[in-house]
Every structure is written in C-alpha cells, then in structure tokens.
Length: 292
Image 1: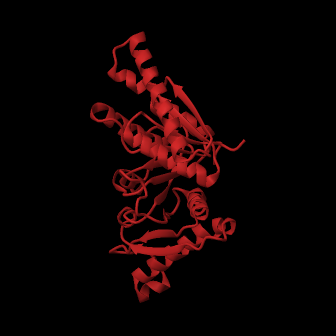
Image 2: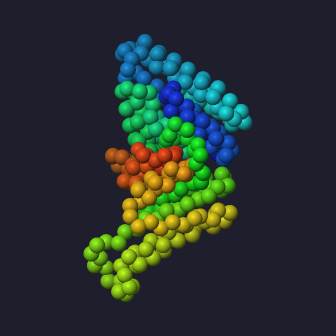
Image 3: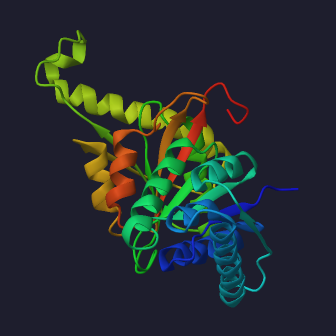
C-alpha cells in the first residue's frame, strides 16, 4: 500500500491550517491522509499524574475529531485515518517519517510557552525527519500565490529535492522555477583559461552547468514539466526568500546522517523556515540510511 501523507496537529488554528494544506495535497496526489496528535507536550503544562495524562489524551481526541470534521468539509473524497500518541511530538513525528510519503506541520502552535515549544518542534522535525517535511507558513497558505520554487545547491538535497519539486509541479500543472545562486570571489586563485575574460563569467557559467547536471536526470521522469531556470549572483537564501512572495511552495534540499546529533539543516533552509511567505518543503537525502 502506498505510504500516507501525515500531518501533525496540536489543536491550534495554525495546526488546522496545516491540515487544510495537507488535505489539498493528499487530493492532488491521491494519497491517504494520516492525522497524528502527539499528546505528551500537553503534559508539560498540566499537573503530573493520571489526571494530567487523561487531560492530555482528551485534548488529543478532541483535536483529531475536529481534524476529521474539517478534512471532510474541505474534501470528502480524501481518506482520513487518525491516531493520538502519548509521546514527545518530535520523537513521534520523526518516527512517523519512516513510513510516510511526507510530513506536514504548522509553523507555530498555541500562544505562550506552547507556541515556543511547537515552533521548536517544527524546526526539529524538519531537521531530522527521513521523509520530506512541509512547514505551512502564513495565515492563508498559498492565497494569491502560484507555482513551485526550487533551490538547487551543490549537494544537500541531491536528486530527491529536484524530483519532489518536479512531482509537485506536474501534479499541480503549474510553473516550476529553479534557482541556482553563484558568487564571484573577490580574489579567485583558480587557474582557468576563461578567467582572462572575467572571473564572473566563469563562475556564472559553472553555476549554469551545475544547474543542468542537477535537472537532467530527474527531468527524464517528468518530461511534461519545463522548468524556468534562474541564475542569481549572491546568496541563495535571499534569492529564494524574495521569490516566496509569489510562490505556492518552495522546495529546498537537506542531507541526513541518521544517528548524527544536532539539527541537520543548511543556512538557506533555516532562513526559509523562519521567513518564507509560503509553505516550505525540506526534502532530505538520507546518507547511509534505508531511504537513501
């Protein structure tokens, strides 16, 4: 059976907006939708003991019940399954990533301490999950936005991020813009015959070649997509962030080393997760793991 699209909710409105986005995504790709509520964070704000546990579990049941109602109202044809798990939300969602087509989360949760906690949860899941993670940013996801935006770097996402972006553009029948940033070092010691004609010309041409190499293989699988190629002199995160003002989804790659501690995210991914004006998909390339 095909893996489901999994969305983590917490009972907050941003979480339910992430659910709305996930319902639409499941419909576009013909996927089952799995709605997961990890209740353990609730216990941080409740008294210890069985009463706190029962209150957390009840909050989870109420949240998934509302999630099912909301999903049915948005698209009754999407098959929905739910689960309330008494676990830490990061651990629960990272575990879900082992058997999910992708994970979807909101950018923040409840106000106060819970809002900070869920913000940290979203960042940690995007940095550790072994499947693509979409963090739904903004009050009205995709409103007035169109097209998929892909950041192409040297190695982090590999072909996985490119394929994800192509698949999204093909399923949505929309524009795909691929962005490759390049820089011309102030003092470039690299010996190369074209440097006589200008170091910037050389570095721009190299960026163009690397963009070609990144797109060529995956494009054979999606011949119906004709990407718009954009070369930008400067920083990748700034170029991508500016373009999220008109995109429906931005896709960025990340490299995963299972078992390695810390948040495994590049600078561009971190900036987009905090500041993008559209949903952000972080697509991992798992090195040395089952999903590589």
